[in-house]
Image 1 (cartoon, protein in one colour):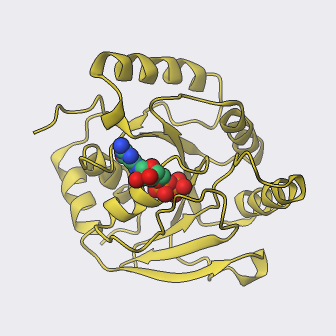
Image 2 (tube, rainbow, N blue to C red; image 1 turned 60 degrees about the horizontal axis):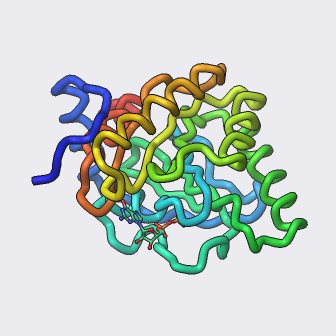
Length: 218
Ligand code: GDP
């Protein structure tokens, strides 16, 4: 049994609803390159954002207990699509393309930023963006840029630390506290940071509970 991670506490009802939400079937809807192809904005939606290789696909797969839903890859920066998944008629998950891939050509970065800006501004059902940050590295400049973009778009967001299994408990707590201090300067940031490991599964119950609070009620 691994040590519990420094996560916010949720009451039993929220944990239970989170668990139920994620036992529902998760269905891939489509991947889109252009915003006019997006699925109907009917369900409440959450978007996953993060630097390439931060562990976004692994997190989505672990949350949904679905090994092959989001593609885990050793070649970062490959996909530019926004991939939509529906979770049992209660919540839409939007997997945004990873950013900050060093080898990405400049015009691709510009195209990416444009799509994301339009997405963040133009999706009326978007309840929260989840910004994934590697627990070993903390906020990088590209992450800061994204947070600013979200502040400017008036999109609420919450940070999820990934790969917590790679960091010793004391360093992890310090990393989280430093991050909380940095986030306090951002108007649209949720004050609670979620801490996760897709390898051990730690923190998944808390993420599920947080997302169930945003989902359409049962
Ligand atoms: P993405 O590019 O953000 O979708 O990242 P991936 O999910 O493809 O993961 C990138 C790499 O990090 C892969 O080699 C994963 O196996 C690894 N990885 C992802 N999550 C974790 C985690 O929680 N712990 C550890 N140790 N490795 C992870």
